[in-house]
Length: 409
Image 1 (cartoon, rainbow, N blue to C red):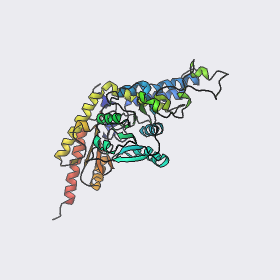
Image 2: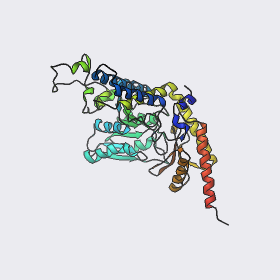
Image 3: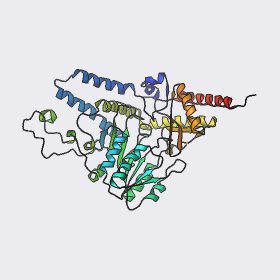
Image 4: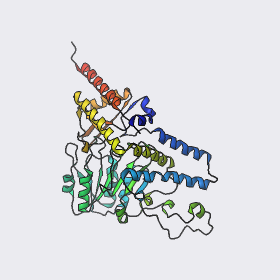
């Protein structure tokens, strides 16, 4: 699968220059087709009974788990399907055993949802939150180490920061957390799909990733990874019936058995699936996610990363020629697909975003902790012509701004 054929999977690109996968991305034809096929099933009930149709739906949804596991080099039983990154982080906050006085480290530039579950635990349970400062937008492991005490239990961090695209050294942070016996919880939504993460090479305790950004499956489904050797240390969730071990003969046969009783000793599945809500789930979301994951795995994550990094370098070089400041780090080890630039003031940044949107060049304006600007997302479906159109429009904006500010004779 080459990148031009991948581009054909995204018909939205015929009418717009889409450089905003970091917000809510566009879906490929294959994901939409898979969802449409499922909706036809929902419309017609092709199985001989509603029970069998429901079981078939469960099997279609379950196909996303092994694909998500393959994406991050995990085991299938280490993956749970969740609604979003936010839900995955909320599950992590409920599952990791914390008590009053325990310390959690959160980085200053984070998206607010990374902090919200732990802020709630601070207010409700009395845990302590410590904010790790940044240095010119970068996060350094020594800053995390400096804030660790004997009561530090957990670090929660985005692998790629949402406003300016800085990618943290997960290997070094993982090594620090393991050496100190500290839980490491990672929000990977701004990285996976652009640059791979291998949870075998880089041990992470819990990782949450929604599907609607860089994985191009905007249907309300993502996944939560839980490292297998940490599961026994977690608080077990309130589970739905699908977290119960499948009875002999399957659920269809079980529900037809006269002797079943609701109040009994239940045996729950082992593995991350126990943390799924259970019951009737978001079937279209998981089916769309599975289709998108197949595309990424077929294209090859390393090839995608090379493509994304190369586009980012071409964009930064072009911005340099225009004299526009780039806040995203230049080194590949410190970035993924986001490139953020600034014209110097929030007002100018807002103006150029409106200029770009009016020309159907889709980008976003994002800030946090004093960092940010115009955020551009270079993804697998973008190409040199997309970068060229953005740079041409940016130059046009500069020339117009210069004319309007020139003194009149």
